[in-house]
Image (cartoon, rainbow, N blue to C red; front, side):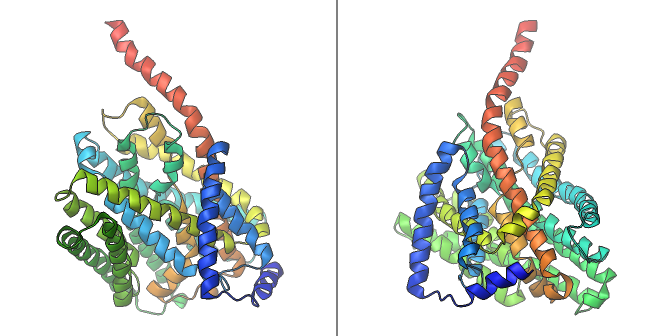
Length: 451
């Protein structure tokens, strides 16, 4: 703890002007491009280098208190959720009889994963507490930590597959659309389940509750309803604005991003939460209405341009999160991160086996789905934003429940698990792809040989 206070005190003298902020963001985008090029040669995503650049920037006195990046979490996350909701191709999944399976995998797969992780992470934290990792924390605090960590890990991030996709020849778009649906649905269902689990925890521990249980439950429902319906309404308005008032293609992106931020702000002002659901709903509703009235060229242009925003946002997000983490504590908590990553790997094949039923996918693609649980910047942003979530939704002061060590453990473990997942998959999946292809071709040849 003395180390964290020392870093904070050393940073207090730093000043970050408007001009400095512009230079900082410009350099970050340029550096991310260079790291992406280097990463392709080393088979490691460039965003991993950006994360570690932020992580070790702590030695230079950077922190959330001096670098104005905290709000960037909201900006980047809104773009990620809107983009995933907008760009998935419903007709392609329907043609391949994968739409229902994709929704089931996203919905029931997320629920099953969260149930498994609740027990897995909770007992894991008890073990790590026994060996001295989390000292002085009561079991009820470990339970709430479990809820926060599971909520963060439950959200899929299709962005984490883009680097690997480019390294696999013949990677079909249909898998990308499965991941996009998983991102959209898992973001909504994990938020709902996390809110209900926190509400149940507050019911068992009323000393931390500021409101009556019924009032809190109604507030959760209100946030969900306002977030979803305001997002749908703004998505429809956005569609008609694009159709009848936007004359140039570049304006498509500016209007879409503007509506996404506006939707988040409106929902956040009305109920103090629900903004992320609104951003996601805008993307999904726009996808449904806009695709029926637009040309393929317009959709591809919007998708490509939004992906550029997406890449820049993700780079900023990885750096911002890295800046807020203490390097020594991050590596100290690495065993817990490995434990979380193992839990992610264990449950994924079970979910794919249970919920993906389609003859359109060959063995190779089923294997990729089974070994690939896409975790990325969204999970990292959610665990970092947990204090704000608890404060806005339940009026719970995080400092009254978690000490600094507990919060650091949650952030370090989830971020570490995401980084490990991305690095391992970047190396492993492209190497496994030829094996899956050969195995799939052998299985396909067996019936013909028998004939």
